[in-house]
Amino acid sequence: MSAEPAVPAEPLAAIRAPFLDQAAEVVDAPILQPLGLLLELVGEAMRPRLFVVQSEGGQETCLRPDFTVPVVRQHLESGRSSGRYFYEGKAFRASPEPGRPDEFRQIGLERFDAAGSSVVQADADIAVLAWRSALAGGRSDLSLWLGDIALFAAFVDSLGLAAPLAARVKRVASRPRLLAAELARAEGVAAAPSDDGKLAGLLSGLSEAEAATVLEEVWALAGIDPVGGRGPAEIAQRLIRRAQAAQAPALTGDQADRIRRFLAIEDAPQAAFDAMRAVAGAGALDAPLAAWAERLELLTAAGVPAAKMRFATALGHAFDYYDGLTFEIRSAALDPERSVAVGGRYDSLPSRLGGASGARAVGCVVRPWRAWAGGES
Image (cartoon, rainbow, N blue to C red; front, side):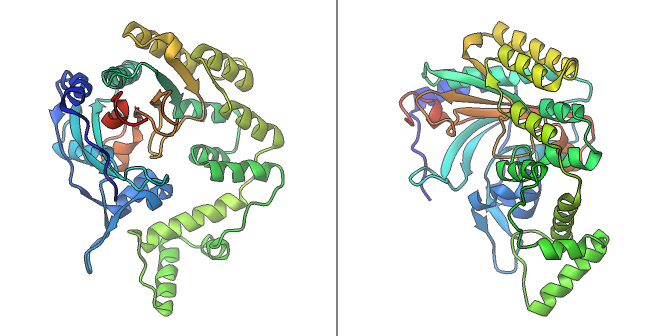
């Protein structure tokens, strides 16, 4: 495992300073996190990047890949309806690029507001916080890239798809391989065969409890001790979902084409919004785009230059629990995959962890080594 170099004290303090102005509670999170829970929340695609740890006979855990999930859990345990939490520490993710660090420092803030609070204002506040922190590192080539998972969901709703198909398209939107397979079905192109296709088909006629029992019996007969943090019920549920998706109605050619066109939009915000309206049709996205006009006004009023902002409809993150605003702060000196800061809205995550529905949640994280002008290049 390779560690990211340390940032000198002075620039690190400057990058940290905007977070200290937020009157947030300082929190930490255990380095070891439950593997099964994280995979369920952040998506199976993250598994190859996690450092898995398991004691003999113990539950599988992993080194902390990020702070958001553990901070959400701490907030829920507090019983409060709102709160702001500041954290700084090491995170651990295996880099897909040789030579890149697997251990790195993060500085971030997670914000929780009661149901009914202003989403637009909180979104703008968190993006401005990340911008000011990133800018304090000394780079002069930063840009703010914006996206919105909920905006894509509203576009999908405008297509008039059957409910199961609409849910499927929304779920795979941030996963290029799965989205390509769904779009290929619209053209009658067979997707690559899945190793679990026959088993998924057999299980799809059973209830989840019955399917889980069948899996346990198969494992026992084969002498298999499953690993990976998932129980038979979770695995059966995923297999059934895959079988149902394969049997579901496909997109029409026109619907698939419109989705491709929508997800290809990447431009200055106003130009991007005009392009979205052209693809979606008159009136389809009026409400979410009106909210975005307000966000842009708040961002520019807070000092983010309009010329430094871009909007990309396909902008997502490694963690797929985001369900609203997404953003990245990029440096022209770095590869786009190496963002200086990222953030977004994840209102549904607290409820998935047992919190009350309707609560608001948004956060951001800055990578100091990338923000510092003397750091990564």
